[in-house]
Image (cartoon, rainbow over all chains, first blue to last red; front, top):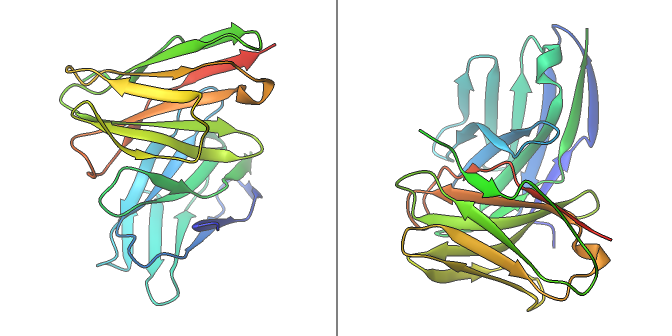
Length: 112
Length: 113
């Protein structure tokens, strides 16, 4: 059973555009929803995270929108830049543990 | 503050051999988790350690094992290597068990010939 489902698998956006990546989860016990950014040859780096007591969190050009009733959360990258080209993963931890269930990843390509 | 450090960065082994990978967490972090990343299966949880005790284990065969030392450093061992063990092995640390956020190292790329 896939605990976290991520879409799309790949995304091409023009420079300056908005990139949107979606995740849906199954387990209502999840209480922390991070997004990780991974460049080739590097480990995942924490980008932004949200807890279910808020519906939106914004940090610079990156925003998480959270819909608790639909069990969905999404990453929005405003004014996308070529340097944002990377693979993005959503995740959710097993409650009270550090075990992450990861989405399958979205490869973002921002065209100059 | 130094991040999570994994050594070695690259490793080439042959089938049947065994391998040990090392992870030094961020200073002050006492929880360490390990993940396997492959193109086909994505990121899969191996195990989680806190205070030298394994708290959680993923769905991997017994050939995969780990341990944590009193200084929070952790090692994972894979015995009787198979071709399918070729992967990027990632370590993540957090302050205490069950706490967020977790921070990842850059991984050890293991290739099995």
